[in-house]
Amino acid sequence: METGRLVTSKGPLSELQVCFAKAEGRLSKTRRKLLQQILDNSEETYFLSSPELAKRYDMDPATVVRTIQALGYERFADFSADLRKHFIMRITPYSAMKTATEKGCTLSDQVVNSLQKDVDNVTQLRSRLDVDLVVQAAKQIRRARRVLIVGIDFAASLAWYLDYGLTVIGLESEAPVGTFGHLQHKVRSLGTKDLLIAISFGRCLRDAVNAVIEAHSRRTATLGITDSEFSPIAKHCDSHLLVTVAHPLFAASYAAAVALLNAMLIACAHITPERSLKALRRIEQDSHNSERWYGEGPQPQPTTDPKLRGSRVADRYAGR
Image (cartoon, rainbow, N blue to C red; front, side, top):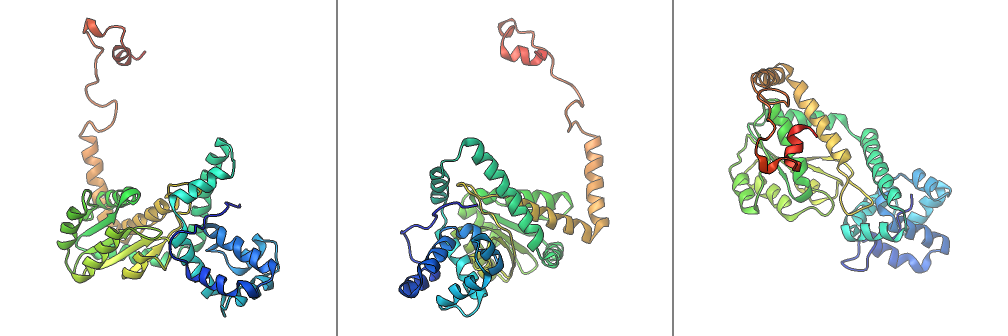
């Protein structure tokens, strides 16, 4: 699916753009067009293999390889690495939504495209996820005395989600909210037996990366959740898990990210099932002895205040 031009003239050129500019005079019209299409749609092409790129642009795989070699790359893997970096550098919420607006799609098309991208991201996670890395991450979480999860802005929802899930199965976890100063204080309380999990995507937020760097100064283990092995989070963390959050609009798609967190929680729960069951049993017992669920305990009665009769409030209480 073509998404149009996402490359802007603002900001520094990516390494791939520099190579393209140097080689452009030596390239044929066909090769220039192919490379420009790959660059313009990097959010759709950065994870594709050479045969997949050839299929996308209806070309012979050998043509794709020769075109990439004409840029000066000996291996496709090197070109793919620079394409990932290019994608991370150039995509912005503004450019993404501007592109979607310029496509002239109907509102219904935008909704369908959004859902399809979520599905594509989850499918990609399913096909590319290294399950052993998830298991290793879960074991690391289980061994930690305390887990601090850092997620800022949109990613705060992911941090809270993972924190809640870990707490439910009896682990000591926290996802701090508030100012960067508050986050700093939390990171500075970490020790060698703790674990910091940092969640950030794209160019990565400075505060999230700085939290990782601070944790390292305290010899605290770090685990990153990000969308590229070339991102600052992947670069600075001891280990990392990858998940795509590409989306045609301004907000990242966290469908696959939530699926990854679910996989991590499942692994954490089943590493020591007895401990997890004990924690869940306690919650179940507490739930039975409380008024947690709707319909349990005293219910609100219809109002008797004559001033409210016939009002929306009274109708709500009366079930009308």
